[in-house]
Length: 375
Image (cartoon, one colour):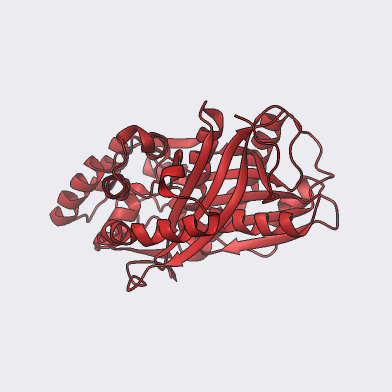
């Protein structure tokens, strides 16, 4: 299927990804948590249930300590209790080092996929993260390492959570529509595991069971690509805050890392508002529900995917890519939807793509785009 023009004026040409060198199975993660000195029987019972039903098999982390003898720990203290817990400063220092490294690896992967080596034509750089901060940030380090032009405009989207990649794509879309010839590099880094904490509340235990680390890079351009390759042509984006849900998902800075609030009601809230969510993006794009050929859903958790599948009466295979990413990587916050879109770009399907991601607020971001091949 081919399309002669794209009135929206923005194309995503490719996506590169990166994960830390350290990985562990979900079974190992459960045993590690069960073995922490001071864990109560109540906690152990809850963790066994959460890990068994997570639909996750493996996750990656920048923390090297997992599987090591406590005497060799470099992040946690050398004690079975893992206490005193690392401070927010210590966690953020690890974020800074690894965000600088992983962001560059993701960009390298992107350029290798595109067969592109130089960066002199990059006009804008968008970076995204909710798991760490610094000034200068990894945007500065990327600009320096990639030798981007001095006039490259840099933007950072911070602390918006799992939906922020779609916010970044919407910004890139606006830039491309406003500036003919724009070439936008968007880089996400989320290192959720640096905020692993021991707290006797269900939200923290759920967060410890599903979140993981990863990075992504995407090139979004205003000019139609010339190569015969699959691209995503942007159509429209929409943002929606769900009613009475502010306290059901939240992310706050604490003394020993960032604290996650993740209510068990999140899947139900998303389910109850799906009709309005779809109505908003479909009205913007001038399309109907039946025009959606491919679903790109952020795999925030198994229960969320199941609720979406049920509410939209989707066949299981229609969310298979989301389940695959959840299985192999867990929830990498804003990076996760980019892993989903990368797989969609690589498969044989073409047609209209609806991307959905959600995060603190509850805020839901949607994007309507078209996967096409161009001569």
